[in-house]
Image (tube, rainbow, N blue to C red; front, side, top):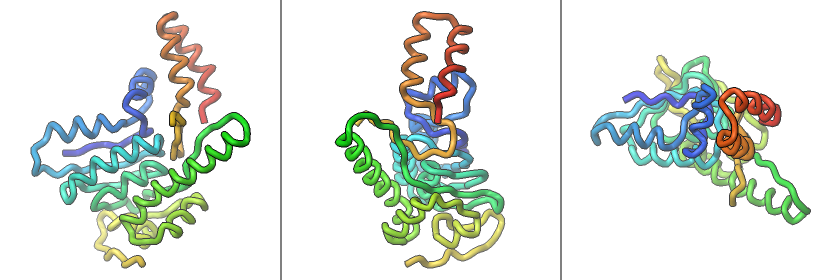
Length: 226
């Protein structure tokens, strides 16, 4: 079975928003539903071209794929950035010679006093360690090495990805894998994940206005998307 992990990685409850505006996105339920339709011996080929998105949606997809063990094959065909780079570590993998990985620190928005800011910083650092664990499990690198790569916002070519051990081989080439020694919306994304508050605003708006007016309001909200 082929599964395309293209576009932004989003939470299950937010997928409708992206579909409504024709925006490419994938959520954990998509992969769970796809796997449920096949037998327990069929291989799942996951093709990735994604800027990332929700850390926890990405973690859910990663965990689901890891449960397939040697039945999952990962193919990075464009960009596997941020949360998508975590998914790329879920099984045996290859990468197109022209594709890339990008890994960086998680991010969020916060408001409040210095206690709130300190708490947000602490939470983000813990999330970074959770993300790093996927890179550590795949490569054998230390947690500190993984965190340093994330801290530098590392753009990683196909050959570098194989050297690090993040990817097993370059597609079409025979390469040996080198040995390597709250409610807060937290994201690891290169692209256009929509802020939760914007989705909530539109959901309320749809109860009071028609399709055309909703599109006008969305254009205003889009200016606030990070």
